[in-house]
Structure formats: C-alpha cells, structure tokens
Amino acid sequence: TFVELGGLDALGETLAASTHEHFGEGVGDDALLSPRGSDSYASEILVELLSITKRFADAEALLAHGGGVARALHESLALLLRSHEALVLQCALVALAQLLRTHAHREPLAALGLAEPLLRILAEYEVGFKALVAECVGWLVRE
Image 1: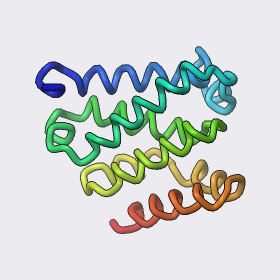
Image 2: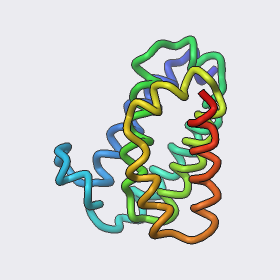
Image 3: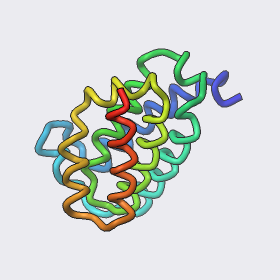
Image 4: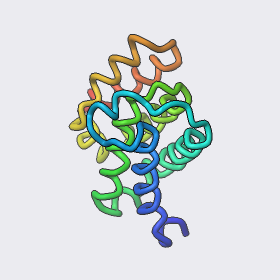
C-alpha cells in the first residue's frame, strides 16, 4: 500500500519541496512573503499534493508514522497560507481544515502562528475563503 511503500515520507518531502519552490528558492522570511510567480504546472502539482494530504489527515498511519512527516505537512500548510494563488490557497485551507479535525494535529498547527495569514485571508478574499478560515478557526479554538 501507499503507506507501506513509504508514500507518507515521500508526500511530506515532496510537499515541502514544492512549497519552497512555490515561493522561490530562498527559504528566508522575505522569500516566503512573495510567491515566485505563476508557474501553472508547479501549482497544479502543489494542488494535487494538497489533495493527497487531506485524504491522509485523519489516517491512523499518519498519526502513528511519527512527528517528521506530520511536522513537514504542518509547516508546508502554514507556509502555503501566505500564497497569493487562489487555487493553491483554497486547497491549503481545505487540507488545513481536514487536519484540524483530528485532535492530534491541532496543537502543533496552532503553534505555527496561523493567526496572521488567516486574518489576511479574511481581509483580502471572498466569502468562500472566509468560510474555510472560519472552519479552521473553529477547530483551533476547540482546545
């Protein structure tokens, strides 16, 4: 199966690499504030990776697999909340909401400082995005 063949490790590594590529080669704060531009192929790959991520959000395999993979997924999602590409941002919010439904993911995600990017999304995006942000915030405050 996907998990037995090391798929979760590959997913975490590939999502992290694609996230950093989305924002450019630099990993510093300045690089993360502005996406590299629209590279539709890279964005499509990122969207697919996020779709796979949301499918494994509550899987026991991800929770049991260890902190490294979950940490990579959490950090990638936190960074992707700064994206200005609507489809990437929407998929990141959906994956984030799915992860937040599982108690084990809430505390590590909350520790990543999600408030600022979520507030930016509330201020700058339309109702569909605001509904996703509201769902995420609802899960975050359940602790």
